[in-house]
Length: 328
Image (cartoon, rainbow, N blue to C red; front, side, top):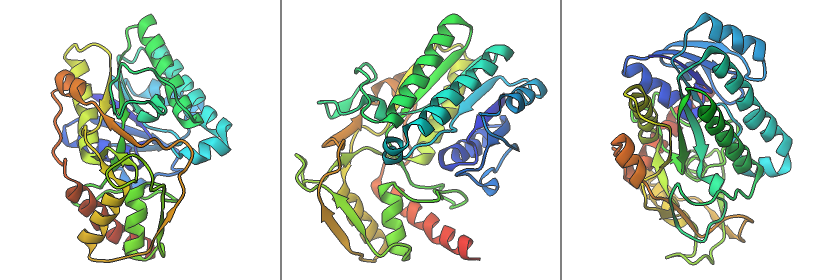
């Protein structure tokens, strides 16, 4: 299948591109390289461009007869979205609207959209189903919720089929260390802990130790990036075989506390590092985990790396390689 992958040079997008290429798809990556890298594009053609540039995007669609679009290009840092909300509405929501306009013009039949559990906000429930109300509490979550709605509305009004994947906490790296997480500034827990191991950071903080969990720290559902990537490839196959549009949670359905994750990083690396216990951050619920019943039923998806040790080890292996690569 001829596919366009926006944001395909970034962390998640690049892992998906690798699996799409291995599955035999014909790939064009469209990325502005704000957080991505040319070396991360392991298959297909890289076009450097911004979705804000509608004329350039239109020209790419005119040249290539895409059968599907996988849309990853977005800003994803929650605290930044609170401080600079219009950046998120411009890049995430407006640029998705730009992309949908081109998809409509060229009648592209399939779309897979990168969404987030942040659309649920702070629900009372700890295990979340796709049927739960959407009540985002930050501009990042709101920008994704609005994008979801636009995709659903266009699908209703046209022949576009879509699969929206709501990610939980994506972590880890390609098991060969060919790809991994390399943002300008780390914000994700496992990445931050790995930077403590390599000496990039002197230590880290844990926000809140008084939650109603088994050790007082927050519980999250960590999913290996390769398992997440697998869901995208399966979503394309599902639609190509006549599957209807879907919204699917993507997580393992179980979680680990912040303290358990840090302990796993220390154990796997054999290194200790300072951890400062500080107060809660606003907007952090006790626990968030995916009900993944639907994705298993609809796509036949099952994880290959549902093991915190595997996730952590792959992240550590990548981090060691990345620090050497940066200093070379």
